[in-house]
Amino acid sequence: MPYKRKDSPVWWVSIIDSRGQRTRRPTGTTDRKEAEALEAKWKLEAYRRQNWDEAPGRTFEELMLAYLNATASEKRSAPKDRERTRTLRKYFAGREMRALAPTDVRGYVDQRKKQGVSNSTVNRELCLLSAAINFANREWEWQLPNPVIGRKLKEPEGRVRWLTRAEAVALLSAADASTRAPHLADFLRLALNTGMRRGELLRLEWRRVDLREGLVFLEAEHTKTKRRRSVPLNAEARAALIRRARFRAEHCADSPWVFCGKDGKPIAEVKRSFAVACAKAGIADFRVHDLRHTCAAWLVSAGVPLSEVRDLLGHASVVMTERYAHLAPENVRAAVQRLEGQSRSGHATHKDAGAGSS
Image (tube, rainbow, N blue to C red; front, side, top):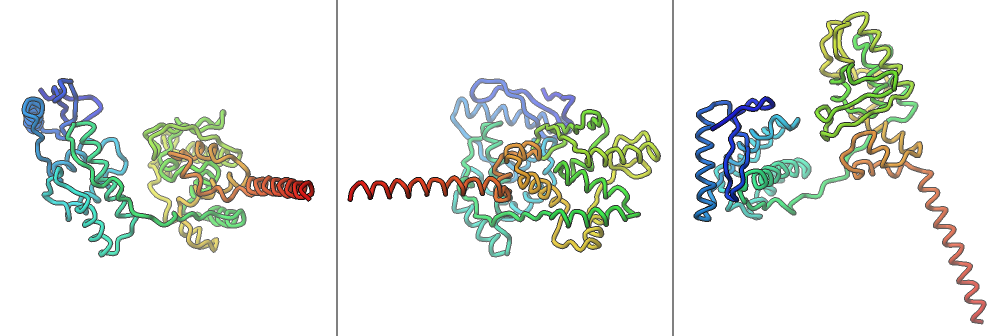
């Protein structure tokens, strides 16, 4: 019988799978009758697979609908996933997933490239399809082939833009002078000195700020990588938070948000005021997310190890951080000096060997 869980709005069912093991899964629906129908269907499929070795057919729509419903509450990218599913459906509509072959994937890639779509966009669309197939195989034992594996297109190196110290001073001066967005200067200082993402800052609550210890605590639900982390505050970041605390005490003492208006409601976006400040500072080709790049670039330039920068910024792996490796001049200089030392040693040895043989 379908049942409800406190942490989920949809009905769940508990069935014996084809291996004889009890498994619990979400039905993706809030309608009890639909949930009961799905439960009956899954039980029949498990019986057929166990006793008749029969694998049921799965269409593209069935796969994607089940995957999107099952992961909607866990993924911040759910709206993007739905958008990409609509794009994929234009080509894969009605396809039987067991019959899907690498040639079908190549056909999709060719079609998208003819439409002028970038390789990175195509990769993200196919990544969603691959994730859905893997999820269904892992969670529901659908045993679908995954022809997307090995089909990733080559992408150009990602764009990385950061501010020089002089540009940062100009941008902060422009933000300090803003009367329409008095929160912007503090937002910029926190972003530059902590490397926190835009969403992490705009959704930051006071209960996650410890000014005495100089730390901001981010739970997994608040981060892009779904990993909790603690962010240390330097003097400038701490001063920015103190200014926000004074603003709160004066205008909206009950608001839980660090970045809020006088009405206590959270500030949803800084894009427009940020663009105005950049224009006044004479800074071109610079986005809000580039504040994070700037923080990373400054840290690496100061000699902070890449692994520590990774942990501070919350990168999923050090690969993301390695884009800044060339900014560590002292490390590079030391490496060249070691190479030079080896060359001298090798040259001396060669000379000595030549003298001995003459």
